[in-house]
Image (cartoon, rainbow, N blue to C red):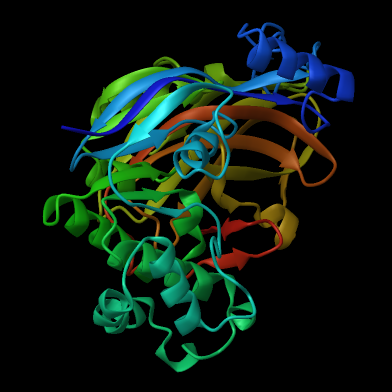
Length: 420
């Protein structure tokens, strides 16, 4: 039996304005659609939501012709690059916004966690917000009281339960918001990337809870995340969105592979062949990462380091360093080696043949999954001698709990790596 049915869902936005832009356009839309029963005249000029191109018409489709069904008790991962339409789809399902075209049919209560503090009143306490959210879901006070202890214990906010939510940190709000959504027994649980706000311990608990809901209680879960390891472990089915359209729907492993191969490194080749924007006086003959010239490698749990070797020739002296960035498949930086910029560690390379080596220690808490690597030889904040974006697909198994302590570069938003 289907829990949710998406039928030809489309969402059209006009850039820079609300509605159609003018009162005459609004009246024309109303006359054509409501009175004459014609198709919306402004739908025909909508463009695909490609963020890399300037809009010509001013209208873009955030979603277009989305059709699929979700069976009761299924766990579906919705993945894709930023701007693909994932959050828009969940907002339509959660009745936060309405579709321009199409219809969604759902059976059962829907609990949504789309943004930090969704559904919270900042002046109300944590306890009061729990009861308010439960009432919105159609639960009685007795039912909420029965779940209250579990919600508070899971969120870990007992000390602040009677404190106004406006004084909570973003992490506390997300812990409470997820706990309410997960323990008030919805038939359908909708979770966006918002879980990334929580710490590693809570993310692990949240994934476990969603697994329990789907496996034990038979709840339906829609899960949006850029953490491919979490999607792989939790979901059985994956739907890949790109530019507002479904480009793949199938087993989660194949969906992840389709997403990664389509958004990062497209084919097997040598790392050195990924070089772009090279200075004319620098020639690079070979790049090896962990002993391979190819743009694909994997690390086992016992492997603590990445060894990078760059061989080439320069006709001018170089004052340089290696910049090494590990990213999610969607391009979000997760960890980076930029010691030349933050520690002033620069190498002096004389004209002629050279070999540069970096022994990069991985950070603590790097989750298992698939990543993409950017490699640069640069003089920090001055010039790049070469860039090699998306030059390596890196698969990591396990967590690196016992290894290097990370340097958290808060202003950059990612972890700083160390080398020896």
